[in-house]
Length: 255
Image 1 (spheres, rainbow, N blue to C red):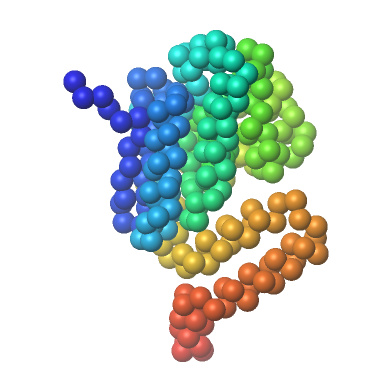
Image 2 (cartoon, rainbow, N blue to C red):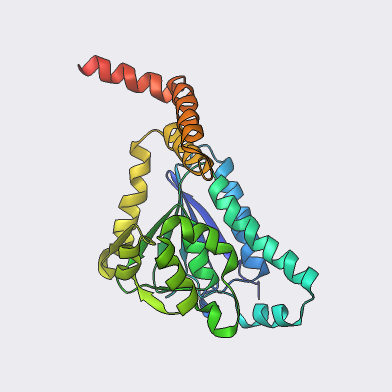
């Protein structure tokens, strides 16, 4: 029997659909799935027809974190081997920010541990009403270390501290309230609402969205004056794009 791919990739109109495809393991992370995600994201980034990337999970859950085999590997590996393994996940999180168009996580069911980290690493998070989020790593003496840098930029310091050190699961509505999730939709209309949301990126300038994403993340760690200057520099670049010139021409024609 042919082994199924851990990640499925398809382009539907302007959207690249990336599906975690280990439903029998609740889409748990392992080396093959992480590699597949990176390959899919690079493929989407190279496709000029794509205006958004949608990451979801096959079956009932988004992603339940590392699987048992991966955890066993962690416990039996040397410090060097574990550093290399952690570096692979770091590269995935960093790649999401380097993909030029928005990367949207569509979370149905559970997004826990590394799965919650994956959702948090995406630019936008859409959740079904019954979805659950959490970083339970501390319960087994582990630290959700890499996602801390991203989570700290998403929520307040006190919320981040609580989420990372209590190990509790929270509801989609609570995740939305603290800033981890952008929108929560009723389970019965989740897929159609997600489809409508990502389709919205087709109605705006692709180049403007790409430049905005680049500027937003580039500003991390900058002083206020440096961030303002970066904005001014990019403002000038945006004015020279074909999208901006055509948009101004349309606006002037209407007025």
